[in-house]
Image 1 (cartoon, one colour):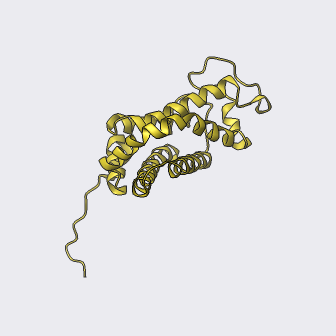
Image 2: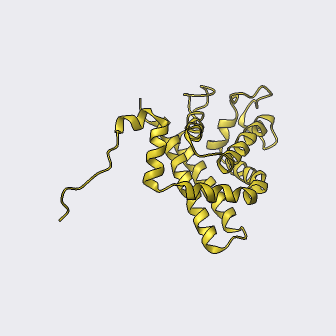
Image 3: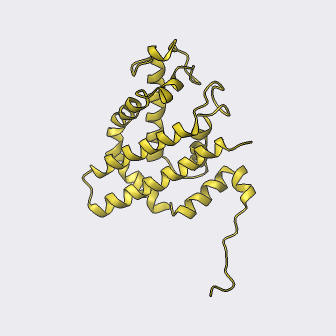
Length: 197
């Protein structure tokens, strides 16, 4: 029988109010550590050249469903160019879609090339907030189910790409696991912005 169990004390209120604390808790709980970060950074030279293709693959899927494509019709925060009049006018080559593709490209570059610290925690959290009326354009309110679909797609695309790289089996497995942990943290930092106020 277990006696005198020692628990790691977690301030649950602070988890909801302190992004850095929440990130650190998730990383520790999941086991996302400096070894995982090194693996992600080490993969950058291999993944970097493939990122434009990953972006195109992601947007091909996003634009093939009305439930996801419709979110590219309203003016995107920071986009000063033309916007599509309707969903029927939307295409992969539209200036606003190109603008969003650039954001996703920068996101991929950010996660493979930057330090994992308080700035990264805030960046990952901002990625979650910007898809809701809490940040960016208040007309953009992407439902959580669509964000989960997107994150599942990104996880699949990254995993598939990593498995195709010419790494030794152990490094490949550890790199896939590192990205998997990271994307679960990202998914939480998206989902938190959908909690009822």
